[in-house]
Structures are given as C-alpha cells and as structure tokens.
Length: 140
Length: 231
Ligand code: HEM
Image 1 (cartoon, each protein chain N blue to C red):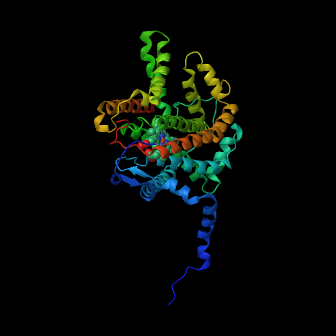
Image 2 (image 1 turned 180 degrees about the vertical axis):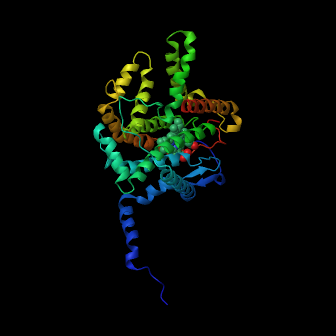
Image 3 (image 1 turned 90 degrees about the vertical axis):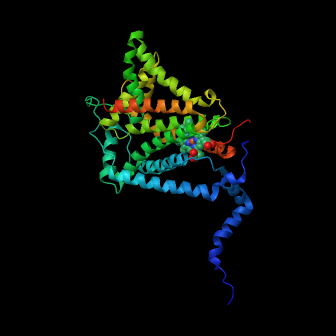
C-alpha cells in the first residue's frame, strides 16, 4: 500500500473524472489513427526477392539508432581491431541495462522535475543522442 | 395522476444485475475497481492508457488480418494483396494495424519519459518500472516480428539487417542470428517463427505483463510527485 499522505482536496476521483478524461483521450487518438491510416495508407513494395538487395536497406525506425551506432562505432578502431564491434554492441546494451535498473541507480527521494535538474539534463542528452542517431540513420 | 412507474421490461437490466450481485458481489468488485482517488498533482497525460488503447486496436485489427493472412513465402505477399485490393476495407484495417503499431511504440516511450520526468519510478514503484521495461521490449518485439509478415522487399531486407544487428554480439552473435532466423538466411522458417512469436508469444506475454503492471499500480495508487516516500 502507498504510504503517501495527501489531504482529500488534493485527490481526484478515478471514477468518473479520470476515466472520462481517459476516454476522451482515446477518442481523439482513434480519430488521429483513422485519419493517418486513411490519408497515408500502408503501402506494399515488390514481393521479397532474396537475390536482389535494394539500394537503401534499413531496419525499422525504432532500431535505427542502434543500427547507426553500430556503424558509427568504427571510430573506436584506434582501440584495436575488435573494439568497434565490441563497443558498438555493448555500449547500447549497457545503456538499456542502466535504464532497466534506473530505480536502483537513482535513489534520491526528490520527485518533482524542478528538484532534479541533473536527471532532466541526462534524459534530454540521451534523447538528443538517440533522435540524432535515428535521423542520421534515416538520411544516410 | 398516478406516479409513473417504469414498464416492467425496463426493470430487466436491474434484475439481472441484482441476480449476479447477490451471488458474486458485483457491487463490491466495481467499488474496489473504480472508487479510487488519484493525486491531483500526478499528471499522467493519459499516456499509459493511450498505449493500452493502441494495444486493444492492434488486437482487434490483428485478429481481422489473421483471418485472411497466409503464412508461407509463396502465399503471404498475395494474401496481403488480397486484403488490400479485394476485401472490403481490408486496406484500412491493414493500414490501421501498421499505424497503430508505430503509435503504440511512440506512446509507450512517451509514457516512459513522463515516468522519468515525474520520478514515478522511485521507491516503492521499482517493480512497476521493471515490468514496464518488459512491456517496452515486448512492444518492440511485436513491431520487429510483424514487419516481416507482408513478405515484400522492405519487410525482407529490414529483417535481414535487423537480425544482423544481433550478429554483431561477440562470440554468440552468429548463434543468436541463426536462432532468430531459424537458419543462415531469412526464409520460410523465419516467417513461421516470426508469425508464431507475433501472434502467440507476444500477445500472451504482453497481456500477462500488463495485468501485473495494472494490478501493482491499482494497489499502490499513482505516485504523488509532491510527496516524499520514507520521510
Ligand atoms: C505496453 C506498454 C505499457 C502500458 C500499456 C502501460 C500502462 C500503464 C498505465 C495505464 C498506467 C497508469 C498511469 C498512466 O496512464 O500513466 C501506467 C503506470 C506506470 N507505468 Fe506503464 N505502461 C506501459 C509501459 C511502461 C514502461 C515502458 C514503463 C517504464 C519503463 C512503465 C512504467 C510505469 C510506472 C512506473 C507507472 C506508475 C506511474 C505512477 O505511479 O505514477 N510502463 N502504465
């Protein structure tokens, strides 16, 4: 059970207030989804041909950052011939593991964003790097 | 004039509800589920709920697609063509499923970012966070395995390079790649296992993880950014 104490005035009833807003949010999202799906329909390319590699082969956008990092990791060559591949795989993995254990790495009691400038800064930095790598991967 | 009394048929829903309520305690269940309060200072921006909404859309459209999809390299592409060109609104269902997949990933990440910004992962919500990370991986797994299914050039080569990322892992990279592909290349075996993962393993694990996620959230209540735990 939660041991946070708040006065009733600071509480919002889940039903019907929160649920109603949630349903409105779903309704709007459904509209956006239908509009996107109808206006920009999912296409279909030529049937798969294992013998013919297309010019611009890319993974899905959500793997592009890792994919691009793996390519960029070639700069670690000065550390030895195996370094690019090792670092290219292990650095993103390390990042993911760190993210997974975030609650155990950041044990500060403060919660509001205003009181945690360092955390915000790091989040912004990681975001910029990931988005940057994704765009780089997309347009290279 | 006599007081208007509702006609007897209008009392049927109440009677049915009453019948069940008396036996299995519906009122108690509904109260326990709905009558909660959440801190006004917690702003979810409905991101978790929206992610869940997209999952429901994916389940509905995915089931519809599965009725016509044929999972062999010879037939898959043609069955997608059939869905798009012959089936009434088939193109729309497929398009909604594809857009919904991308939006689900986007909103899952946005939801995670709001958890980070508001410090909602801190004690006692570490478990909710870890289960959430599981949900993120499952959501990405859905995308990865689903992308191959249309069996067009984009699908085939995206899967080829996607699985090649795994091959970069030292020592066991090659084994991971062959495990993912079911052989050295992306082939009929890859398609079968991607479909199995996409339609059975991923939905089952997502539902299990999500149930856990929600049960814990319901038990603990939403985090109040203004409150400090253990003080
Ligand atoms: C399929 C993906 C997911 C779904 C459907 C989902 C759903 C939800 C819902 C409905 C809530 C209630 C509050 C809200 O809407 O924000 C919630 C809260 C929460 N989620 Fe998720 N979630 C998902 C992924 C994640 C991920 C990736 C993380 C982080 C790694 C995460 C961590 C949390 C935490 C810590 C809470 C508690 C927030 C609080 O107490 O204020 N979830 N989730």
